[in-house]
Length: 363
Image (cartoon, rainbow, N blue to C red):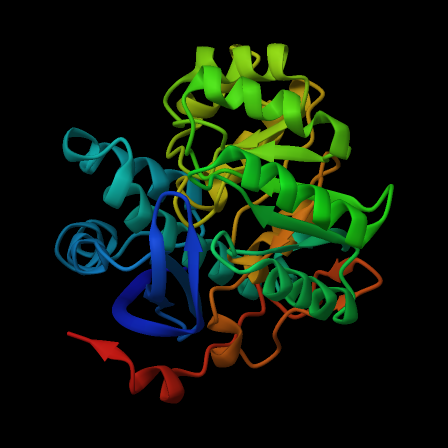
């Protein structure tokens, strides 16, 4: 029995190297990182984390420290599914999404990391082991970048080994979006994998108009064209717009993904392990997608997601965007000829620079 003896939660404010922008969140100069370290009676430790785009981290930290930690103390860390169930139902009345699921996700990731370390296996092998080579794309947060800056960023990403690029759309004037995507397509050339992300900017009819204008650019997908709650609307956009859709980074339960997929509103389900309920739920979403013959993709925290995509047979692209966290990771993800490789280190293999992070500690 791997008895849970201690859970430590910490919060940090991580400044971004450059101010980033999208159509919904505006300018982002920093993000909040909430980390969890779960230790068992043998001294083994699992690490998990979640993040915010600048607000809410203190509430997540409090949920973990005040409510979820006392609940789990003394329980068997190896019983990850049971521990997830305990956390879900203990916080169900105030949760079923949002901050509560961010908190559950961080602990669940730490428990899986601990389980894999105890088994002396890399996480992707413990979870099933499909293929340790995963296609990756560079996820730009670049809506307000001038065109020359956008193309310079893209050239830099190509130089770093990427063979797929995502750019933001959702400007006030849709014609500007279309023109910028056209310039990006010319820059990359025909057949190069290109995605665009609207960050929920449009209503359904507007998104359909945008999708129809974007059809000529041979997109891999249009991401988050409208609010995540409108499953029927997504189905209309997919059916009438004629462009594949990726969405799901703002869905916070298995049931929401089930509703979206059942409505026929997504081509590439996109769970984020840091906010969907952790690895336990992410793997169930991937299985749900596989049952409908859909490929699954990811959002952010690529050092974790590379393991999850490497574990499943219906993997699509890995979004490579760590929100600047790579500065505090001992062995950050490397892209070579468009592929990321899941590491062979036990657990998820993410070793954080706790001393460096300490200067950014909150609370």
